[in-house]
Length: 152
Image 1 (cartoon, helix red, strand yellow):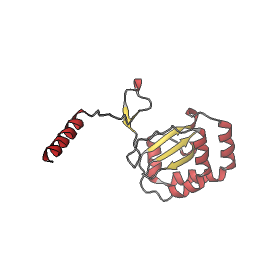
Image 2: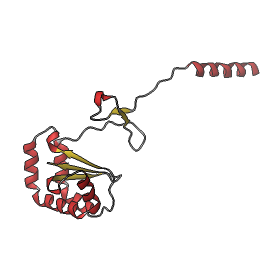
Image 3: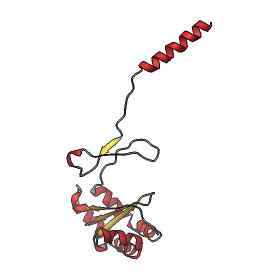
C-alpha cells in the first residue's frame, strides 16, 4: 500500500513539472502610442480583463440626455479624479443627430454649464487643459471620481 501511495505521489510530482503553462495577454495598446508599442493593462474592478471601446456620438447623445442629472451630481463634487476631455469632432457618427439632441435639451445644457462653472475643482482642471466651459456639451462621472467632458 505504501508503495502505491509513493508511486502515485511521484507520478503527480512529475506530471506537475511537465504540464504546459500558458500566459494570457491582459494588455491593450495605449491610444496614440507610436507603433502601438506601449501597452497598459485593461482590468475591471473584479480583476477580469475588459475591452473598453472609445466613446462614440451615440455615447455623447446619451450623456446629453442625462445633463440634468449630471449637473446635480457636479454640484456635489468637492474633488475630481482624472478629467478626460473628448472632442466631439474626433468621434464617428451623426453630428446632425447630436445637434438635434442638444437643441431639444438646451435648458439642461445650460444647467450643466452653470454647474461646471460653479465647481472650483472641475473648473480648475478644465482651465489646466484650456477648455472653455462654453464648449462643454455633456459630462460623465465615473464611480472612481473620473470625469469625462465632451466638448465641441
